Image (cartoon, rainbow, N blue to C red; front, side, top):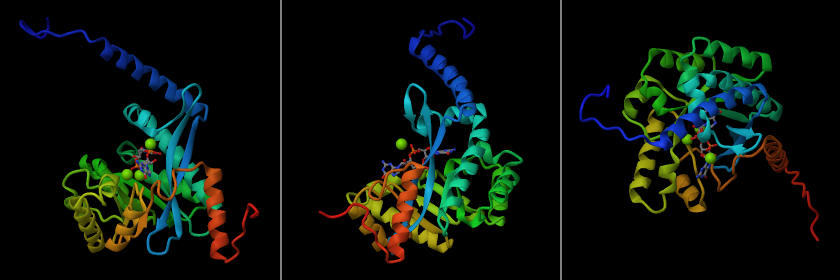
Length: 286
Ligand code: C2E
Ligand code: MG
Ligand code: MG
Ligand code: MG
C-alpha cells in the first residue's frame, strides 16, 4: 500500500528463502573464521616458452563441516558484503606467504584481493608487516585485482596499489577483457601482469575473434611492459596458440587443477629434480 494505488507486489517465497539463507551464511562465515575452516588450494603457473614452473595462484576453499569443500563462488560475495573479507583476506595473504616461503627458490605466489580490502586504510601497512614477519620477499608476492575493483575508481585503491608496487609487491590485473574502460585504467595504473580471462582462452581454437582479442591483449601488455598470464588453459591446442602469440605465462586444467598444499609441494619437488638433472622415478618400472 505504501507504494500507492495500482501497485501490486506478489509475495515470492523463494525471495524470503534466499534472504534467510543469506543470513545463515553470514553467521556461518563468522564461526568458520574462528574455527579455521578455510584452506588454500594452489594452482601452478608455468612459463609458456620454457615450461618452467614459476609459481602458484592461491585460491580459497571452505571446508564446510556438513557441505564439504566449497568454492569461493559460494561465499566471497557475502564475505565482502559483511566486511568479513578483511579478516579472511588478511588470513589468505599470511597463509599464502608462509606456504610460499617454505617452497624456497624463486617460486612465487599470487593472491586474489578484493576492493573492500584495498579500501582499508591499513591494508598496505598490514601486508608489508606480514611479509616482514614471515621473512618473505615482496617481489615473490603478486596481488591480483579484478577490473571491477578499478571501476569503483576511488583514489584509495589506486594509492594502495601504487604503494604496494613501491614496496616491491607485484600487482596483476585479473580477468582482463571482461570489464570496461580498460585502457584508461591501464594508463593510470601500470600493472606488472595482465591476466587474460579464461573466456577468451577457452574460445581460442574455435573463434578467430577470440584469437585476435588475445593477440591484441598481448600486444597491449607489451606496450605497458606487463607480463601476460593466460588463465583457464584446458587444451594443448590453446597452449600452442598462446605460445605462438607470445603469451608469457599460463595456468589451467591442462597443466593442473588447483592443488592442496601437499600436492603443490610434490610438484615443486618433482620440478626441482628435473632441473638438477636428477630425475628420480618414484614408482619403479616393472
Ligand atoms: P580467479 O582469480 O579468476 O580464479 C580462476 C578460477 O578459475 C578459479 O576458480 C580456478 O579454480 C578456476 N580455473 C583454473 N583453471 C581453470 C580451467 O582450466 N578451466 C576452468 N573452467 N576453470 C579454471 P575458483 O577457485 O572457484 O575461484 C573463483 C574466483 O574466486 C577467483 O577467480 C577469484 O576471483 C575468487 N577468489 C578465489 N580465492 C580468493 C581469495 O582468497 N580472496 C578473494 N577475494 N577472492 C578469491
Ligand atoms: Mg571453481
Ligand atoms: Mg585470480
Ligand atoms: Mg581470473
